[in-house]
Image (cartoon, rainbow, N blue to C red; front, side, top):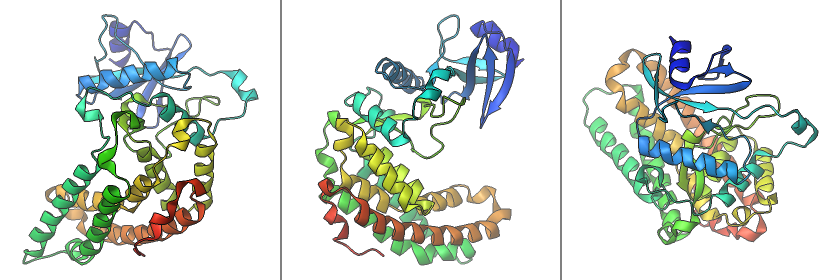
Length: 341
């Protein structure tokens, strides 16, 4: 069925099928393709596709390019589901002779060339919306806190949540205060944004061949301030406990000779790092799915306790590394104005 669907709608013969992480892929006449689920927001997908083409024209390497069906559609029914197909960059042996550009350097390139590419699609535009999003999520946690506190019977997860929430609410409020007072998010202009990723982590870019090791998938693209990508990548590094890698990442980003590398708004990054995002996600996942996983409550309580320990370790390392490694040009003394460890 898979091969028939591909041939009928794209005209491709599947010479070989394989898996790349969570994606199914295939070879056809020397080209590699991956199949991804359709996110059911066609206007957003079309904008992301256009961004991919613009990035490729601007010289950004290793962008997975969207493929249309033979009748010009971007969506196709494959194996009974609505799906998309992307062509992966071809292996280029000549690049073996060239030094690999660091991840942060390529990120700075993307931020620079895409500056001001503000979309008409609201779902993709996060510039200037952090405060509203954070307030909404913390308000939901406050509602759960009140509901759980009123319960007659509480499990281990409930008790840990009730005990820890006031502290993490305080951290979130401090992050939001910094966002307004120091980051001045409300003063950001449309041209301050660039193409970012929904959540930039070590797995956002993936290897498709020995020479194409940082493939960018357009479905992750959103429009926001570069501090989004930098903050989330630093978060993942600090969560791993590697202060030296964080230092190298910052140096590589600043080493890129682009305005994007010199236009970083460190108060925005600091506010994002201070937001207890991992804690929020654990609580959201538990209470949004509470009725479906009753048998796993004990395990969730243990995982929550481990998450709390990891979050505190992350915060200590974050504060130490930012104070030690922020480039002098950023005037990062604001980070010491409040004690939170």
